[in-house]
Image (cartoon, rainbow, N blue to C red; front, side):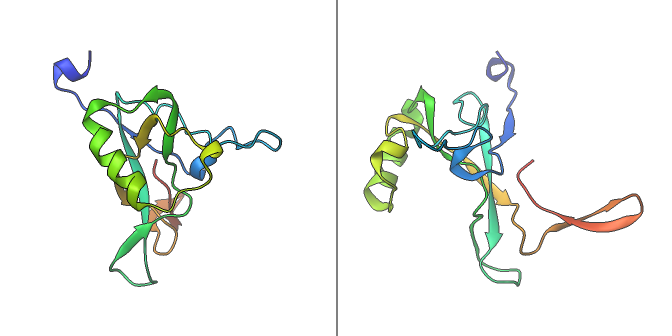
Amino acid sequence: KAGTRGLSILFASGDQGVCGREGCGFIMRRYRPDFPAASPYVTAVGGTDFSTNDIGEEKVWSCTGGGFSNHFPIPEFQKQAVENYKKSASLPRAHLWNATGRGYPDISALGGTKTPYCVVVHGLGVGIAGTS
């Protein structure tokens, strides 16, 4: 209903990588994308980090959440992009992830630890990172 009202809902993709908050498991190891970021009804925001210790080119942040949903199929608007990605990417073994699931994140923003955002907490400047 939010979309019909012109509302966009953005959600952090998570900061635990492909295993999400549940973890990948020890025996039946499988990636577990986070909800609600894996939902096709939200815009999932992943994290990037600077490639060097200076401001400049960015790369995927190693802790950002992302992957392919275990609950939602690839939406029509993503089919071509996901197909192209699968053809060109170096992917992990097929049993670890859902090849028919919705891919996320949809967009990314700086969230890594090389040059964290500075905030003031109790009067002290601290650096923070993450997608939340």
